[in-house]
Image 1 (cartoon, rainbow, N blue to C red):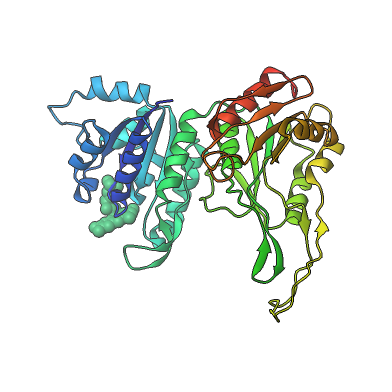
Image 2 (image 1 turned 90 degrees about the horizontal axis):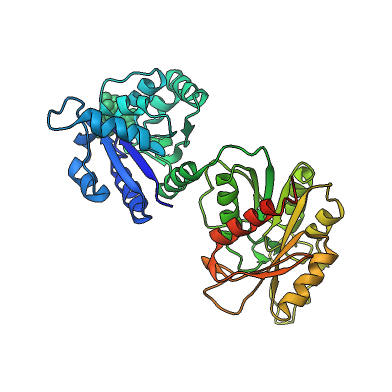
Length: 395
Ligand SMILES: Cc1cc2nc3c(=O)[nH]c(=O)nc-3n(C[C@H](O)[C@H](O)[C@H](O)COP(=O)(O)O)c2cc1C
């Protein structure tokens, strides 16, 4: 759904990355308004942001051609998110203390929407206790802060202070824009593939990309859940605002899930967990022209464990990937694993399922079999979660 997003741009070298953020958000159909500090215009021209956002950029509060009251107070009312990208040490200090001496800081103070700060600065500026205190103050006022990453800085230093990745900033803005108030429910989601190592450099795995669990985490966050994501290695950046636990193999996934499963209201097992593992050889297994026999042991069945240890009111959702007899196999799994829902899918088409953005699934419960049309993994997660809430299985 289209949201109204205000991007504040301040005078830092990372200002050019705000162009990518504006461009990505506009492509996703959002209404974008950019406000720059005067110093930010030394780094990027307002014309660039005007072109990318298709809206006039404001800089000067006292611009006589600009109807401040009409345009900016109304913007403060209609904004869903105000994100400062990048946020300089200077503007961070101002917003921490309620200063409002230019268009950006004045509008920021007037806004009561979700607020996001994406600090970017030299490591010493960031580590300065004054800056650290300012970050804490802003967090205490309810502003979200996207931690700056490590890396090569424009000033030549290597360390903390780089602007968070554009992809993460865009995710964070969209998640805040769609976020509903907390519903005080906890959801645990497993995602991605596990890796069972044969030796230090070889492993058994599967093509799961982790997209399904990632979309579940985003949707659950938006609907007000307290989300924990236990995930195998993926190629994605970590999702902002989501408690993420990274694992490699099935045993680690079981340990992490078991540790927090009891307190969950909903558990979604969308990870593709290995069914078999082996003893990892200490050194690389050498070829000698002979066949290699692998002895594989079954892994702990996590879904079965969760079904056997389900607390009253808890909802357990499993995934079933089948190559034949989809419905019958999934119905059997539902009963065997004591699940409330099984989301069944096949690998019939490369544009669906593993790695793809879309999937075509059947939701199976004890009462019915509901086939959903092909849709994004995000919409599938939304449909299933809303179905859970409608059927009031956990309330
Ligand atoms: C080339 C250059 C790069 C700068 N990069 C940063 C930066 O990344 N982060 C930061 O906080 N300040 C940076 N500064 C300092 C700010 O531009 C300066 O503090 C300015 O007053 C910030 O203005 P504003 O916060 O009103 O936009 C940089 C200055 C220069 C000249």
